[in-house]
Length: 81
Image (cartoon, rainbow, N blue to C red):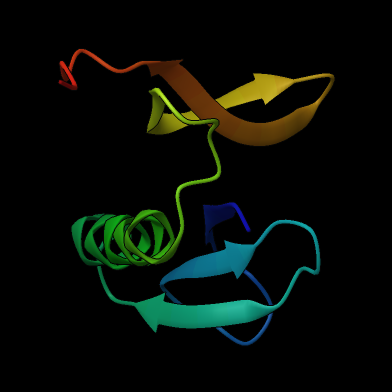
């Protein structure tokens, strides 16, 4: 569920946090800093709920692949015994 920030989106006079795949307005903020903080909280919530990566890998943000945002899974540096 990637999100993006748009200025002047319909229904928002400031900076809007929009869900990319549906175009749904998630929040409207007076500053870009506030919108960025909201978006970071959304991403943090998603990564805390579920690790979309295989065992031995961890999600480090998002990347664009074939025009879509997908989890960026990297080999975990944690050593399991």
